Amino acid sequence: MTQTNELIELFIHGNQLKRTPRTGWLQRGVSQPETVAAHTCGVAFIALVLSELVEAPIDRGRLLAMAILHDLPEGLTSDIPAPAWRRLPAGAKYGVERQAMLDILGQTGVRAPLMAYWEGLDDGSLEAAIMHDADKLDLYLQAFLYEQQTGNRWLEEFWHDDYQFHLDAAQAVYDELAARRASANQGEGL
Image 1 (spheres, rainbow, N blue to C red):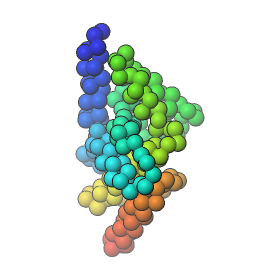
Image 2 (cartoon, helix red, strand yellow):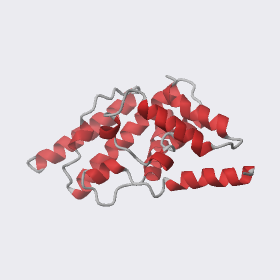
Image 3 (cartoon, rainbow, N blue to C red):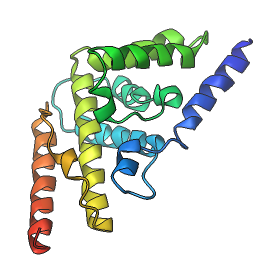
């Protein structure tokens, strides 16, 4: 396969994310949930904003590459929700997603640098920490908005995980979202 054809195949996998719904929302009664691509855009935007609040030196290009690539494996695996992954052996999710990334990237000339960005998601760097905070904030924001816009109360479980934010600003945003949610629910007698 020529380099151009390999790139077209890579772009098709990326494009697939535009048509891949976030399964967790579907399972909880959200009739027209966001796609993985919409989530990716939200994560990248939040990561960019959070990066401006950090005083330490940061590689924003690397951060944004990580944000854009973090769910690319779902172009092959689809969006398998956390309750399903939790039932698999330790490390299975990473292994499956890593192989999916390798398959998606094929033999393109961009395979090595893009794999390095994706594998950087777990390297403990400041960029990885911001990306993970952004990923969680996008989830909480979307859950909050779905609850407010649709009245869907099947999203409660999204608010009860043990994620620890790395950035004080991210924690503050989460705390405010949770407070707004609690206030809205009190107003509804829930």
